[in-house]
Length: 416
Image (cartoon, rainbow, N blue to C red; front, top):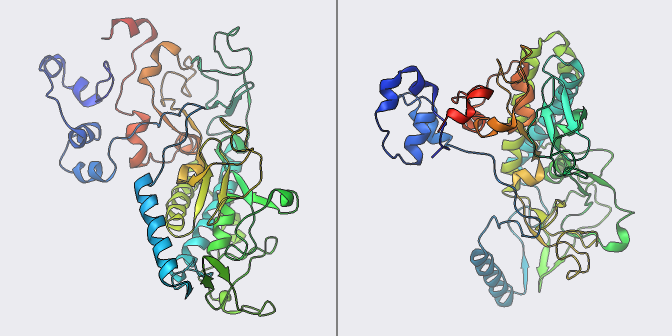
């Protein structure tokens, strides 16, 4: 249920009679239909994209929740140990565990790589163009705001925030502040040598984790070579053994599917308007996240349970650089666990600024701290593209609270 004082626009438009009647308690699906309009046509849309709010950040000393329950992980480990005991020497049959590529996901990897490049180019043009509103970043904390002027919501937790009454100190931001792509170590052979030791931390190159995922799934990048096998590997008592010669050139990986979009298509987009550029950039964001989720279903991606470190591969690295909670007990090593799409592509949530009023383009005052419970949030990419003229995606409508009418600053104490 939404917080008290938040009423949909449809209920306000029906007049005082509609508000006088008591609304029955509804479940999650009914409230979803109410948020999306309540009509029969939007019922399928509500079932596909249920009501969602911004995930609350966990405490710094607590571990991230497991994606897969611990009981399931223990059962899988017991089954693997039993299979290894029954058949010590066996050929791994399922890719990518056997070192081969998944044929059905090679094209998806190329699409994700192309969408990632298109997203970066689109964000750069939107931020530098300035038509979608300037990007602001706090000087003392990671808070980001998309708008002409920064908001007045007191959520700063940086140095000296108590003296400023938790107000932010805004400065101009860049495209790097809109979305975060964490870096990880590049694995030349993800099966033969899946872990990077502490002594190799300066010898192994680091690159964005989304790019490393595409490389392991079949995208060839000249700067970051990867070993492509033609025959599966063997597992002898849990150790991976490769009988393929090292001087074998793998030419069969060339027919891996469609190539990423060329720069000519982006150069032709110079004639696009800001609304078309925003819609194209937003579609690249959605395609990249959807494709990355499909790749993560087969190719392993792990993250630290206490810090934002990410590693693409079957196991995490052994570099001792964790400085989060309880790192002394682990000797600086990371507590690896299964990662999510938000760990691979960090959506920087920002406050949604309505189109008219409350900090919109019409010169209205910025977002007020007293009315923050009426404002919605969205990833900075979505907010930037929507302000450029792109349509709001259905999965972010409830998060942005488009159906809520914020009261005026002198009326917030009159709302129940």
